[in-house]
Length: 260
Image (tube, rainbow, N blue to C red; front, side):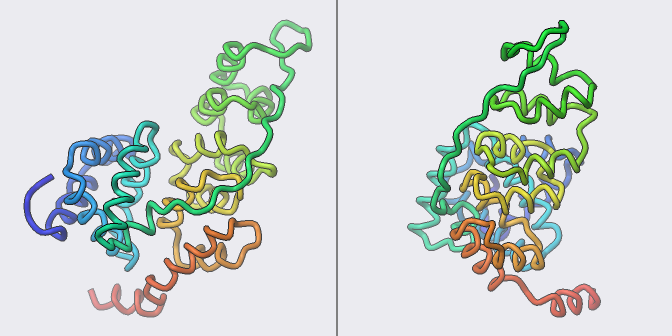
């Protein structure tokens, strides 16, 4: 990360991130920055980026998507924990809203594996067989595998070219939900779809840390809807209200865009 003020560093991070056209490359680049940067400088930089995104600055919002993608990658827990500590100690409120840890929802008992077969007999398939089937472009089999209890199977289904946005929305909205399954959706490319993000935030079984980060990507109208929804966790509704208090009214945003 370059030297300079937090705002200069935030601007550089936004420009470098948006210079990459592919979402996976953006997330990979941001993850490398998160791992290598000094934690105090990183926290200050991300706080400025979060503040700008909360004010509906388009470039900052787009870069924040890559930040959320990077924070959701497995193995980033230590970075998130250190950022949370730094945000709390230095009163970096915008960053704190992004990486807050709301109360955890109750856990859901895992369902049984679906009974599938590719040899004409109905029997529970092994994990390896289910993972293999999930790679095949067969919608009927894939639809049944979406109820599989193992996240590895769900991960492969999410990469299946026959998977559609409607499929993922239904999976993200399913009740009762499975935290590990919802985490796989949050880590996939499908989280870039607004309908999928909204379904994840409204599902009380979604992992709370991921939900808090996704809330930071919601539009003002979506924040208002979630804040009023009894389906969302109480901590998530409260966080939506905090974000709403920071977002400019739609009329102000429109006037600002019209003057440029």
